[in-house]
Image (cartoon, rainbow, N blue to C red; front, side, top):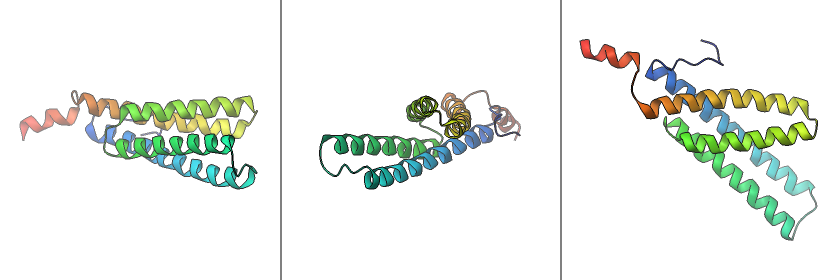
Amino acid sequence: MAAWDIDLTTRAGARTGAYQASLICFLFAGLSTLGLVFLGGLSGYTKGAISAVVFGVALLEIAVFLIAGFRLRQGKGFYWGVAAALLIVLTLAINLAGLALGAAGLDLVVLLFLGNGLRGAHALYRGSGFEDDDIGVFN
């Protein structure tokens, strides 16, 4: 099974996709934390409204990624995952505007894994139509 093609016909395949998306969310939460540490130390804004806004937005982003990661790890959290995907799309747009093509490529790969995880979480939410559920009838 390729990384960009998850198996949504079984419960295990859907859980694997959601698990991969949770790892992506944890990765982005860590990267956002590193960005906050470096931006806070290098920006020169120690007091004032600008630093408070930057700090608040960064904490909000970290919280969304952590909540989405934990919820996707449980096989739930489709809506939190969508919120995380929207933040990554915003990051992608900022990277493309700044001509940071390497970072934009990384964002596209992350969106691929997160999209598959969202598909897996949505399949788990629906909860019907899995092949392994049909096998349980004959046991």
